[in-house]
Amino acid sequence: MLVQHLGRMPYHQAWTLQQEAHAAVLAGGCERLLLVEHPPVITFGRRPGATRHLLAQPSQLQAMGVQVVQSDRGGDVTFHGPGQIVAYPIVRLADHNLSVGGYVRRLLEVVIATLERFGIVGRIDPAAIGVWVEHEAALRKICALGVRVRRGVSMHGIALNVSTDLRWFDLIVPCGLSRPVTSMQQVLGDAAPSMEAVTAELTRRMEMVFGQALTVRDN
Image (cartoon, rainbow, N blue to C red; front, top):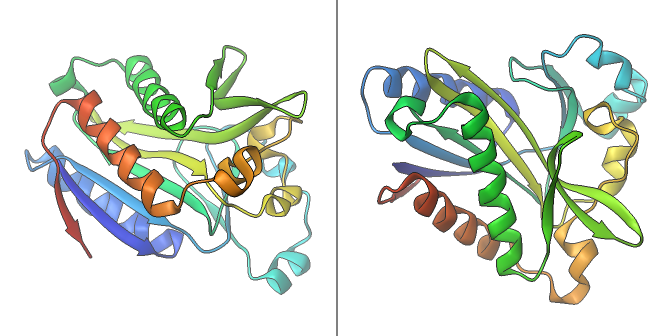
């Protein structure tokens, strides 16, 4: 698996790279893991009615410099921005003996194991996709998940809040659920790890789950 650290990159540019990687993997090329941090962007998934969960007016979004994108991933509406690690695995599910549901569970397991490394107990909620943590007497989402599998090869992936400014989520109803969100920084305070440390652990966990050596290439 080839790991590409894309740095901070606009959503559309990273989406184009995903599509190129998907074509290459579909043709038999090396599987990919794209790691990126996006400038502020709100994306809609393919779930019907997702646009009604946008709370901000277009003029407000424009003034704040927030893009709005209709994506082809699954799920509802979510926010990507600084302080959030976004991981896009481009893998052939059949090579790992995974159904779509099994693949989603593997991604959730990767996030939960990553959080555990830094002292956070993450959990799966059967009623809502993503990874959740108990914080300040409430179950809060710390990682969103939205994927697409086309011709047996995955696209899109996970978004883990490390030090994200949570006020951005006031612009939407995250994933269409009236539930609070959180970040590793909010949970751990001054003990929160750096983006680099979390990225390294997330990458290591991907290697363990998918069982392949990772060759890192920085763009």
